[in-house]
Amino acid sequence: YKKTNYLFEMRGLESVKVKGKTKRIKPYRVIGIKGIPKHKRGISELYSPLVGREKEFEKIKSALNKVLQGNGVVLTLIGEAGLGKSRTIEEMRKECGEKTVWLSGRSFSYGRTIPFWVILEQIRTYLGVGEFTPEFEVIKRLKRETKRLFGDRTDEYLPYLSLFLSIKVPKNLEKKVKYLDCESLRLQEFVSVKAFFKEIAQNRPLILYFEDIHWIDPESIELLKFLLDGLSDSAVLFLFETRPEKETGLYNIKSYIQKIYKNRYIEIRLKPLKISDANRLIHNLLRLPSFPRILLSVILEKSEGNPFYIEEIMHSFIDVDILK
Figure 1 (cartoon, one colour):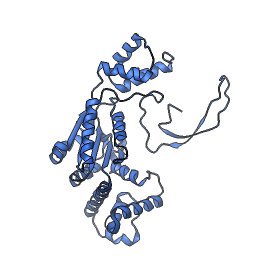
Figure 2 (cartoon, one colour):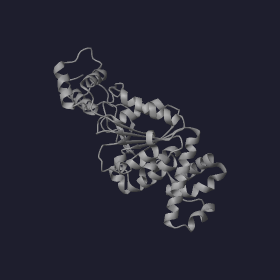
Figure 3 (cartoon, helix red, strand yellow):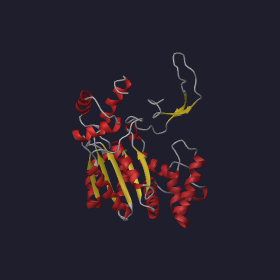
Figure 4 (cartoon, helix red, strand yellow):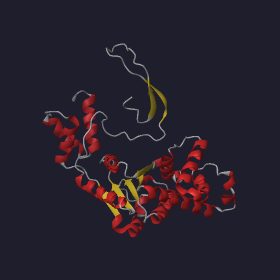
């Protein structure tokens, strides 16, 4: 269960006796595949406060202060796999608390062929629906939220947001989309998505989190540029999490972003932990009064300061009973 629950939805069953085991075992039934698999990172039983990222977190706080003051901000977090991007963002989300609206969207390597995937995820997050939610439920929630956000202007945006989400346009609004060509429809969808996010940010600062943006699809990049320009004067923080590959979509528009946001563009590059910080992480995770020096040396040498590698090496030691 511990090794697969990040991939599958499971339901716990009553404990049973198993031959060769003195204690009863709790079985689980697989009931489906998770719509969006969680990251398999770290050891679930062990925990450490964030280590070695104090300077980086000061930059994050600076970005949050700017958006809380009503300014548009772009924050980019760059780092190789395992250096702690997800954990840093987890701590950032805790820092936000109830002060902001946080909408997440994740890009996938196979999602580059699905137009607007990451931004669709953010809108679905706000509506409280998933990819497989029945259409009638999505329609109901979209109508409710657009009415709440736009009031008397709902009909200006509802048909185009419906098209963007690939759901039925209300019959009384079909004439708004019926005679528009593809280019005009696309523009109206972009305008409506921008208005949707802008209205959300009127009540509380909005954080649009783009996870694994190095895999973003070309259509989302096109819409993202439109949003970056149109929401630069709103309390919206664009949070981009990416690996450092320079051929990715985000790098292609970096100069465009910097031109618009200037000193409101903040970039953080995560590096491997220093030996002292890696040492501190190990002791925080294990919470043992003493730790064999030879094992400590092996972990520090093999991990090369990568927090994920540190935890995986420790996990392997636990699996073979070197650590208990």
